[in-house]
Image (cartoon, rainbow, N blue to C red; front, side, top):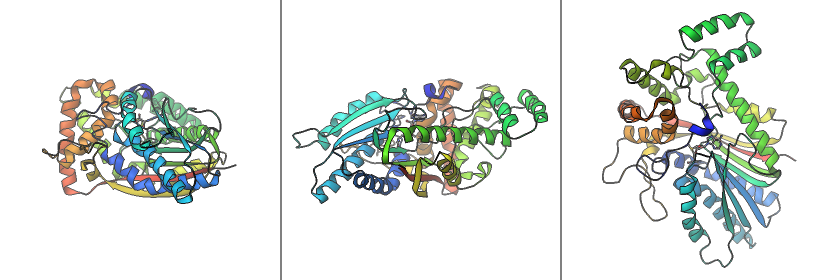
Length: 400
Ligand SMILES: C[S@@+](CC[C@H](N)C(=O)[O-])C[C@H]1O[C@@H](n2cnc3c(N)ncnc32)[C@H](O)[C@@H]1O
């Protein structure tokens, strides 16, 4: 799977779009807002109130959340300037995502943003630009960005190692050469992560190792690139879906991936899809623990110091919340007249995120059936248990 090409959130603003099904990510932004504001104000003071502030949101997607973050940045700094009787800086605001992101929708929504934020001002102060590309590579010139922000994006990996790569990796890093034979046999007779699309209780250690190694590599590349792009003293606030359990196979908060794997296997048994297709689909996703993140930050040549790290839980019910957009229209979920069940809302939220990847691997025909089964299973599970998603928010400072 070429992640850069097949990963994008559902485009547009229809009922299945990410724009209408991203209230859980919105909740994450809201919970971590105080950490973002604190880091931003620290930065503004630390770099001596510059006349131009350069900010980038990485993994901005499209929909109402996209401009929420940059609006928060502008409003926070403006309010601080007002209190300090200083003039407001100019803002260069970059919105980054993979090239498949619906940047057209984002650009169309800018008019409203400018109207709102520049109201009554003679001189324009905010300048927004889109930056397509992977945040695992360089996106900006050296020493050009004051503040980086990223929310619910860094758990998406740049790739999932193929089984062959995994075998080589295990040979190189962990086990003696005699393991090659059983692993290769296993590859032919029984695929390594059979019936699962992510790490599950049944996943062998080689699969867990492949996932965690890929995450470490990606996160380290991310830190290296940002450390080059950021001004000394710059700040970065990252919020990422994480896990509390040390052992990823014991992590129950990612039950929803396990259910999708099971439903795909059911559909394979019923002849709708090929079983091999299910076996060869591995989600390019990894939810790290706090200690994995900390150790990667420490081992990254010491470019960043970690000022703050907090774990918080967001209940899946947040999928059902209905905010209002700039025009007072309901922005998430279905119309208010026909309220969705929690199972439907959660299924729609996950569909808005997963659809591009599932359709490219299995074809689009199975999606309606898959997600209608999914919403029923979720409904049943959520009626018995209150389930949450752990998120980790980190505030980092670029060292001199
Ligand atoms: C769940 S969305 C979150 C979007 C937004 N930050 C929010 O809070 O609603 C994750 C976003 O990260 C983007 N993404 C994933 N991997 C990326 C990468 N390597 N480089 C840039 N963006 C990436 C996806 O395309 C997607 O738009």
